[in-house]
Image 1 (cartoon, rainbow, N blue to C red):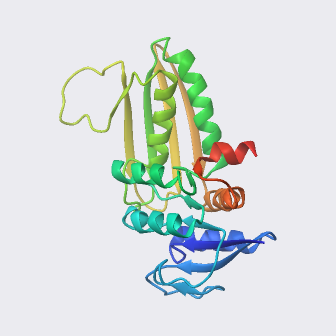
Image 2 (cartoon, one colour; image 1 turned 180 degrees about the horizontal axis):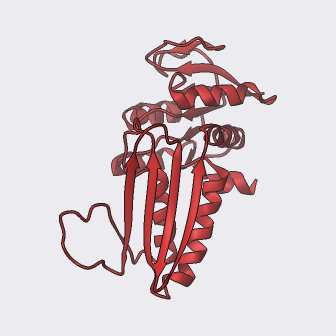
Length: 252
């Protein structure tokens, strides 16, 4: 039985992950971490990782970037693999995450959905054909009104997949309101919408002369991300130090 710590257990995603994990037969949550213990959970909850008394094989993180440094320090110190689902990390935090992966297994993904990870593969392949044919590339992402970071980690990951296919030739543009000039052919426009209870929508638009091709993904519930996180946890437990992604989970 894989023993898991749910980091951010009382958040919206932490609760959904807890529900999904409870339905699994080979993984169990032995502890939750959350400074606000306002919910009834079927496992003990501690205000911090340092206060946690339970032993575990893997940590799943759905918190905020503010908690990332202490999470990575704890993971390295205890040699517990960690699945990082938090987005909006700074460049310094990403570097620290990469440094941590030399000592412990770390899996980071901007989006835990199987469908989104397939979408990244598809847009990468499409870019190799359409960008060469002169198509402009735009990304539109929509999320609920409580999401803090913008653009979404998934939108940036999609842009990175496209840029990787084109040898990093593109740059990203987030706001055109202050500049009056024609669109640069080597830009990827990334736009964000925040409103209501939108779980997550992403469109990658390839706009050419007299034709448009759009790749679209809609998440109807947080369960798709929770299922992916639990699958990632089962994959990562017991793995050697290294930096992993959902691509590795899909292949396994």
